[in-house]
Image (cartoon, rainbow, N blue to C red; front, side):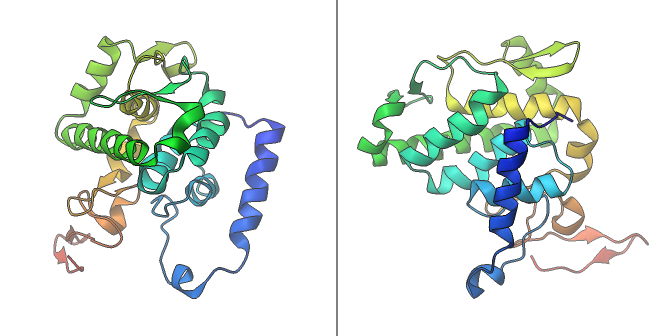
Length: 233
């Protein structure tokens, strides 16, 4: 688990205090699983995961995008995410542009000028990551092997790290963050990772959701006695 800097720890405490404040009834009615990252808000996912003991680094950074910014990203929020979460990881060489396969590069300084193009890029980046993770459910080693061969993930004495060139698409960065974390903590992904087949939501409490469900679309799970537990489909 990575140590937090004093400034980062203060920031996370401030976010936790914000989250502790009363919220509107519609929001309060939604159940938030400690490792589900279900809320479309970076601070919600980051704080919930931190309280559950997850390292606030690679996984938190990736999930902040996949279950937050990809659905409701703006130029300002993307720049803040990049500056506050991506850049401190030291895993990417920034060229001042956001890139994704099939899209023209967008300058970070001009993201607010092209909201439609930005949103299309974010949606496609998430779609590509979800497709890769879905394939990894069937063959986890295949995804990690590809990223290692491409040089996007490498092993160092401290463990696995993501290393992404500035000309690589956003989806490659996200996959490198997840896969490097997966290689360092395989048990977490083997036992808790879930990807909903109905809404593509990514979560980390398979005991509640099933491997291919989420809190809103839980799948049937075998009970401890070998029977099928009846849950909402």
